[in-house]
Length: 220
Image 1: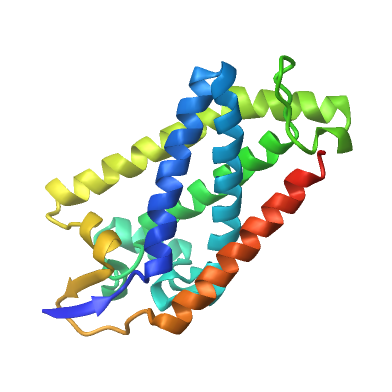
Image 2 (image 1 turned 120 degrees about the vertical axis):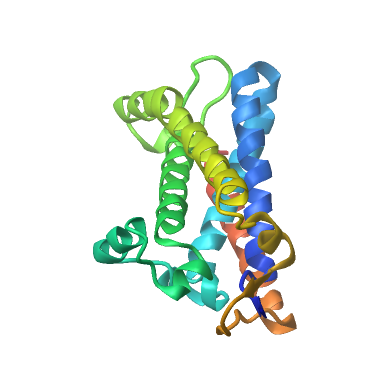
C-alpha cells in the first residue's frame, strides 16, 4: 500500500467548516425569529468559503483542483458501468465530482438569492436596495421554496453516499478528509500541502472574508 497526501489541510478545513456552516444555516433558517441574525452570519460564512473554494480549485493541491475532477460524459458512463480509471479512486470520482459541483452551484445560488431576499418582517439581505421589488420577490421565493430544499437534499444524498461507500464498498472516505492521506494500491502524485501552500490558503481566506465584509457593508 502507498500512503499519499490527497486532501491538503486547507481543503479539509474548508470541507468541515462548510458542513458546520450549512447545518447552522439550515437550522437557524428553520427556527426563524431572533435566530435569523445567526442565519445571516452563517450565510456570510458560506459566501466566504465558496469564494475560497473557487480560488483554491484553481491554485490548491493537485486533487483539490477542479482540473483533477472535471470528467467527460464518457468517463462518467464508464465509471457507472464499472470501468472506472485508477485515478477515479484517488480524488473525487466522477459521481463524487458531480455532487461537489452541484453543491457548490446550488449553495452559490442560495447565497446570491439570500443577499437580495426580504422576509417582510425584520430581516432583508444587504443588497436588496440595489434590485427591483420583482427581483427581491423572485429571489425570496426561490430562497425559501426551492433552494433550501435542494441544499438539504444534496447534503442528505452526500451523507448517504459516504455511508454507502463505507458500509457497502468498504471504502472509508471520511478518514482521508480528516487526516489528508489515502492508502492506495499504486503510487500516485500527492497534493502539495506544506507551510507555503497553507500560508497562501490563509491569505486567500482572509481576502475572501474581507470581500464578503465589503459586500455586506454596501447595505449599510
